[in-house]
Length: 194
Image (tube, rainbow, N blue to C red):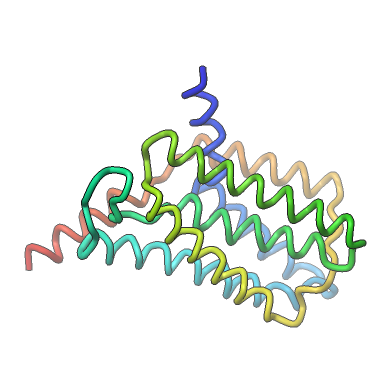
């Protein structure tokens, strides 16, 4: 039961889910004149996170350290890196213009979600502590890139249609599983064979 719960929880960081969600969020931001200023900052931060995650996986597969399981550094967690960027940027947009109490609650909720997501990756034995740390560093760097964008102080108001759309994206991502990890490993094998 515990294993199943961890596996379900870790799906909140599923790269397929977050890539679909990121694309949908970009079009949502772009679709309205009042939100459009946020779209470029979102696109840059989110795509930078995806690029840095894939690049770090590639580099660590080539040059990483395969020591004791708890301390290996071969594949930074894409779930944690992309989730940190995605949920962190969403939290920053939702907190903008709100009262200090609401901003604190959004921040605490986001940190708790990301901490539990990282813990699920560790408890499932999918990543080590250094791999989680590198993933958080990538995500936080991309949050900083988003934060310096001038449009990030505008509050985003969600309505029922937005929530329904998010639930549909979760369903599509859950049943259309795509995993980039084997592709990265295959590319590394070909590069090493050169």
